[in-house]
Length: 130
Image (cartoon, rainbow, N blue to C red; front, top):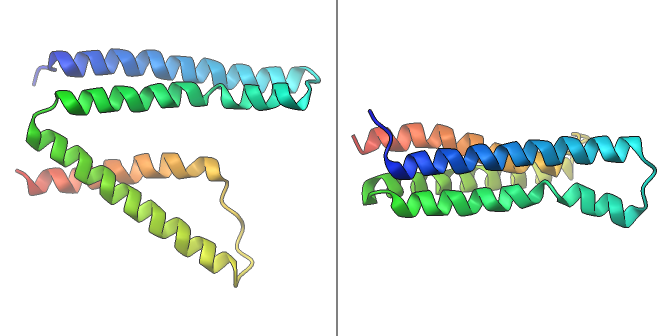
């Protein structure tokens, strides 16, 4: 199956965005580990990789808007399922941490968990529309 022009544009944008993300992330970590920096500079450095993530959201929205109605519904339903599952799981884990000695989960893992669960959900949602 050939990629649509919208899919090609999306793939190019995501390649640029994730390249920028990788450069900013590793550059920020390297800079922080190499130099003795003031706290405000460290905060700015730690936030730099968030900028490509915001651009990623914009690229995803533009791609979904270019999809036909069924494709868009599959993507949006999958994202809703992913958000609900990760929200319930994190809430449940947080409640359990209140009564157990379970370790904390570093917040940086919530977004990748959402992306992963959304991808799995998309597999099942897509089958429902075939």
